[in-house]
Image (cartoon, rainbow, N blue to C red):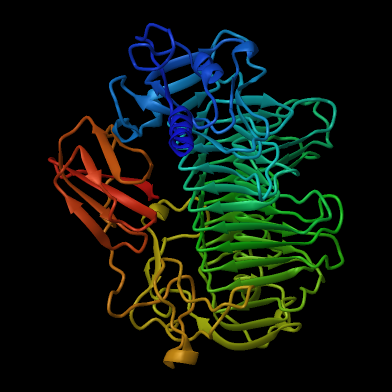
Length: 633
């Protein structure tokens, strides 16, 4: 009898924990136990919920007019949007986050967050919402065990602060924070006060207490930090319009068209896309993996990414960029894509750039990458092409400043430097300026001069001298010009093709943890000479003779078609909205190969695709085409 009673108590507790609470504009606002009895506000549902409950929210707009109505994360309670008000299972709802909106009152006070939190013991996730700041209020505040999935955070604004869209206060290994499958866009920080401030992360801010942050399968775009006030303090520091991060992982995400702006010469404006900025003596780790970082800009340094360990002293850390592309970024000063600096003595930190592409970026010096640091720097299996520097200092591709010898183990291997330009400097230093990297080996460098004094401090070996045209390296579809104004940048393809001199010119290489690098930028297998007796290729891509790259999407026609796919980060199904009749849909992987073709023009099942970035091409009945990018989760 006692056993039966105990089982009944356990079952009863489980049922109570698994309760669903409903929110709907058509419910009678009684107890939230069904769609018919649904609460009319999310606040009421949160008040009633306990750990283990789910809250299902009907599509519509929910306005948070005053701070007293502010929403909050709750212990162990997951909140889902996207329902029409008839569903009986979570799988029946729409995954389109734009259908369920939580917004500030356009005519009200906006100096509070729409959604806030304290650190939780049991994790909580909000999924399927748009948070709209209406260009006057801030978005979301996260702490430990608080997570966002499949949300849109847009039009949020803050003055003299950080994290207009998403602000992450604390995160630890046992209480992490994640932002996944989400879009963070069009958020703004205005730094205009007379008192000095550090402003960062208009899109996402993960500060000094955030040690376990994951940003994955996200789009972070069109965010801006500006300083337009003539009276603003010259001690202002504006860092990372897209993302400001101290420690964590940014994976399989698109960071695009973010901007740090402002005319004042004395104000530091760096890291248009991402700022990595340690602020304590504890070693930090930041990984950027599988990301597309494009079209970002800074009116000072680091158009796309800033890595600055010397912000407040000598800090150690490990920073790794793998399988990522940096395209069409610009800086009005140094480091069109990547800017990395520290003070004069080695701090024991390391940056590795592996299997990555730097193309058509622009700056005054270091069109793609500017280094001013004595830390350990490794550039492996990477492609630096058609970047541009406007000064005569050198380094249209990569510039290493001054006389700071890189740390032990620094090297450039298995990489390609071609098509980079600068203003009037010696050709020998156009592609790669300075010989302060101790070892440069198994690389292909345009107009390489072995006798140049610029390589005097480096050990150079197995260098291929590339010509100025594409006959040696044989890229599939290079851009026709250097810098961030190339009109054909969207159609460029940087795979090497058959008979390239870069094929089998590499040596086996390893990640920092000592494991072999076995895949290339596109996920294809790298040759490993120690086991196959075939040497790896140079650059981000390994050439595969059995499946050579092809130009399947070179005939893209840009048009004004109203064409949308959603969600842009998909688990199983993509939905299509357009004002024209579609004849065929075709999907391509990052290597340019067709992986799916269908005549089902309203929704596409992508569940069979591997995780990663894809191109979605629609061909209309008039044979016009349009292309969108999406991420398969």
